[in-house]
Length: 118
Figure 1 (cartoon, helix red, strand yellow):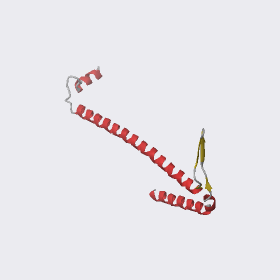
Figure 2: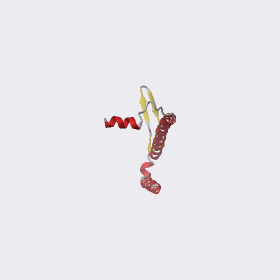
Figure 3: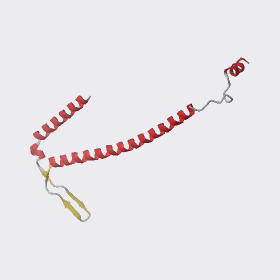
Figure 4: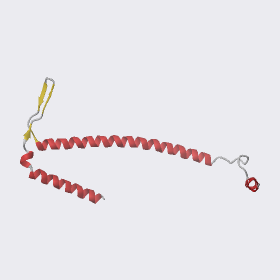
């Protein structure tokens, strides 16, 4: 399975390089980003398209990393809680297993046979 993942990654890298090589003139064109809020206007310096694509990819990667880290932290806390509960339940089972049996509380085999024969 690991080899298939590596192969898929290599194919993805190859295809992205072919895309960038074949579209170099279009991706080198510059674009100016601007935003206007109320009376405030912001305009960026001219940026090539490929830089915007790389920035978007990096931002998406960081957001995915943060999401998966938060999920891992949540799941590790849940696992810790379950392990603690399991240890407590195992301790309870062991303590109940080691209790001496009271003969008065349980019917003997002879008494249970008498009740079933009646």
